Image 1 (spheres, rainbow, N blue to C red):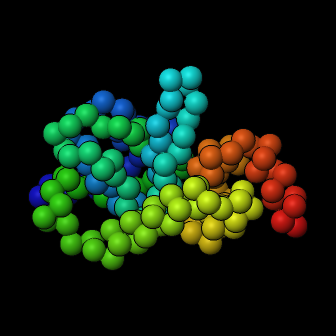
Image 2 (cartoon, rainbow, N blue to C red; image 1 turned 45 degrees about the vertical axis):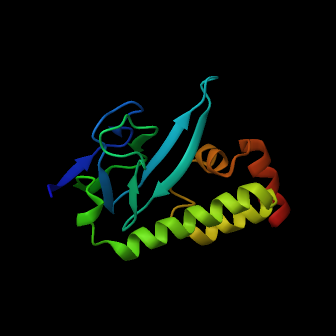
Length: 154
């Protein structure tokens, strides 16, 4: 399995929707994000990946990617081919699946305040490093609603 370390500048894309042969990215330093853009041009953040997190598009390697993946900060990233039989990052993968499962359940049933509190618990080290508009997108709310919920929480 091919594995290489790369440097990625803030705003640089690792993957765009429609790309083939998407990879698995393990963040050594910095923050990546994955997201989709709807037909109206609105961005919907699927996940963040700070240091020691894994990020990838879940489509099989030979199918077009559904997500964009880019750097929020200058980052150092370990890139791997998407051959799941070779992946021995079980702990990282279980952590990622657990976070995604909890997030889906919360999007279906939790209040904005509960979702924001869960975000802080999940990503305690990035709340000051990620723009508020991106956190709002991740939570499925407007930046204004995020601001109100943060004020309510105080």
